[in-house]
Amino acid sequence: MSVFECPDCHGTVSDRAATCPHCGRPNTPQGVAPLPRTLGIMAPETRPHDNSNAYRLLGALALIVGAAVVGMALSSDAPPAASQADGYYACQAAAQRLLKAPSTAQFPRLGDAEVRMTPSTKDSYEFHIVSYVDAQNAFGAMIRTRWICRISKTSGGAGWGTPDAALL
Figure 1 (cartoon, helix red, strand yellow):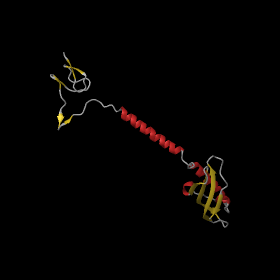
Figure 2 (cartoon, rainbow, N blue to C red):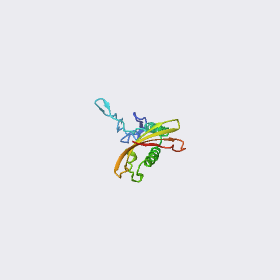
Figure 3 (cartoon, one colour):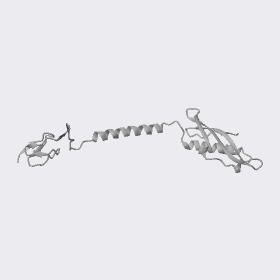
């Protein structure tokens, strides 16, 4: 039994082994056989590739993108959706007080109202809300009336300002 060096991986191979135990190259009685060539292209290696660097790079990239998304979400200047809903319902109550028959008022959902938010100062926002209400008039007829309201909110949580509502 003799031992020789594999020309591919330079590992030691026994002449009795059918293939190199390190890289899998076929063994012949004269030594290790050359890899077959097809159209001048060498056959692919049979060793598994080490992809650990690619996985590290993908992990780092995912971490950077995730941190950027979280940072943008936390630094958003827009108030949360709950603030818009609170402003809508505060204005809805102010508009209801202007009606002839407030107990008959039927307001649409928040999604059907037009809510515009504009920053008035660094820490406060002003909401302009335009919507409609179905309510009875002085004669008992159910009519649809448009209303508009302006209300301000400080982002520090100090509370809502007095709503300025008007029926159109």
